[in-house]
Amino acid sequence: MLVLEGVSRRFGAKVAVDKVELTVVPGSFVGVIGRSGAGKSTLLRMINRLVDPSDGRIRCGDVDVTGLRGRELRDWRARCAMIFQQFNLVGRLDVLTNVLMGRLNAAPSAKSLVRLWGVEDKAIALAALEQFDIAGLAAQRADSLSGGQQQRVAIARALAQSPEIILADEPIASLDPRNTRIVMDALQRINRTYGITVICNLHSLELARGYCDRLVGMAAGRVVFDGLPESLTDDVARELYGLEAADVIGEGATSPAAAGWGARSPVAIPA
Ligand SMILES: Nc1ncnc2c1ncn2[C@@H]1O[C@H](COP(=O)(O)OP(=O)(O)OP(=O)(O)O)[C@@H](O)[C@H]1O
Image 1 (cartoon, rainbow, N blue to C red):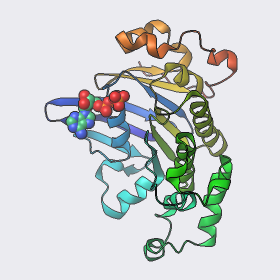
Image 2 (spheres, rainbow, N blue to C red):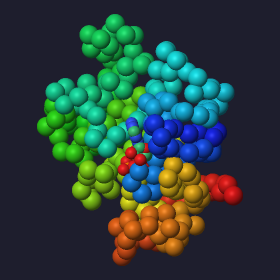
Image 3 (tube, protein in one colour):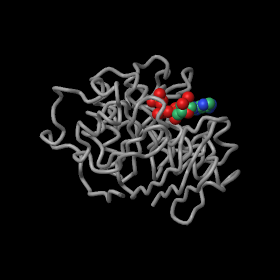
Image 4 (cartoon, rainbow, N blue to C red):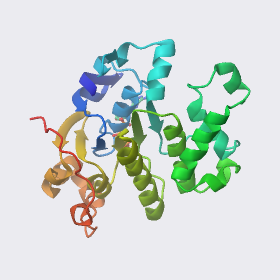
């Protein structure tokens, strides 16, 4: 269980995240939503400790994530893989090597430095690529791929890491609608097949409602909604997004409930 207790982050006078309390059940698919600047990225980055909290505590099981240093911090980062909007692949390296980067923490450092990857590591990396129908691209340079393909490589790299949690920070923000579906389907498959917890920042409410089993709405650094997708009414969304509401509600879009997506496991809604 991942637990955030009174977690805040300030940048100078700016409070980006303000006393967030959050408990994430293993295996859930949590969508973090809210308008631009609400604090979503900062929240995810604190979980992975790319950003340190100014106050509060992050725990996972009996590990105090907030206090980790050195090797223990690297181990934690291996347990919670991060996926970024801009993919963060090494463009001049081939796809397979990029995915093998996900195995760095598992490989002895001398071997990984000279890229003497073991047969088992390669098998894991190839299997991860196969999961997303891109094993045929293994030998291509990462920067020769389309955005959708690159994001699938990034997800394969995360999967090769054998994480417990995947933190996806606006993973589809730079993708077209077709690739958006492919990437969201990939995250959903990982979640359902391996029980890996996914915490995903999303701008589109339609996607958040469609794919997530719990939504956490942020405004001005605070959690202002926490519950099942179906309990986030358009009225609540309008409050959450203000002037951006019309852009994110996705009027006319297929109802996720009608399409049979989302809402797999009930999540307690804190008061
Ligand atoms: N490194 C930083 N230095 C100063 N201010 C920052 C920094 N990172 C974030 N902020 C500020 O903190 C607030 C929250 O930013 P954050 O990126 O977490 O929001 P967000 O909800 O992810 O927004 P977006 O959807 O636009 O990415 C914003 O006002 C932002 O300008």
